[in-house]
Image 1 (cartoon, rainbow, N blue to C red):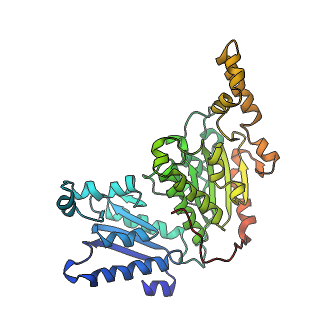
Image 2 (image 1 turned 90 degrees about the horizontal axis):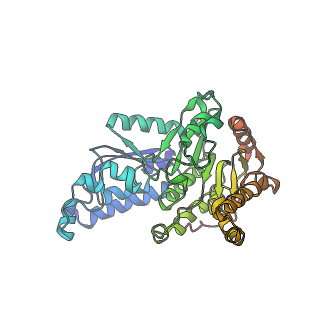
Length: 401
């Protein structure tokens, strides 16, 4: 670990460990502390990758948790702080290692794993591919590859339904934009209402953050906020420009989310985007309502370029909810309240739920044709190449951890 940091090269750890050796007492704990310290010092300086290839318990899982990317393999990888034996002794619960901390548990439920593979060989291929997208250290940029045209040859706007209530797969839009249609998704199985991953534009690595209308309408919640914020900070640490594709009605409402701390978790996205100094470009595809509009790399959080498709709807809240509040008296006093409600909903849509009001105020740089998205992104990133932002000098900020 010391040598990797000195040489400024990526570090890959292959983990299969029962944790601290009880017979060694405090010495084994000291050993883990030395590892955790080095993980932390190297964080944001060199990429750190952990591969879980067996049962990992106790201190053996805290080191991977401190690294940038964790790879797990189905039926092989196990991660837990205390194993089934200890849980049975202390709590009287019986649970298998797979149910407690198997690969799927961490890929789908906890979010501790970033890549899930069916076999070790598939896992190794994933690692090889990841390495092509990231730089060797924070003073470099990722290696550039020969530019390739997108594979998709149709109209990108056809990928999105005309009815704003109908879902679609935002990954199809990303694949329609990036070189060779190649998008390398991260944490695909966890918090699927947000999509993160790497693609290339004109041979350059780009980090993509996109709302996924297929899952919970693409809202932000506790888990998706954590997922997005961490990825944004990774891209910023390693000089990878960020493209945000927005289509979301806001933060997920409800007592469960409020009690789980969605305010704190959601604030992580605000913090990550505001702090990031790499080129940041946003394209609003469809919905951009309320706090969600602000959170998804808006101009107000420091976006360098903001674009919107003609289908974009930018407002404080959705037309139906807004009409019910703003025009409550007119609707209730009408002879036909439902007919009046529909009239007021349309009136609100015409007046507010479009990109032109925001564009007129300078919050959107341009309303663009969907098929021009790639060429406009390329131009924006080229202009941003020499971006230089200096924040006030400080030891570090205090994110809403």
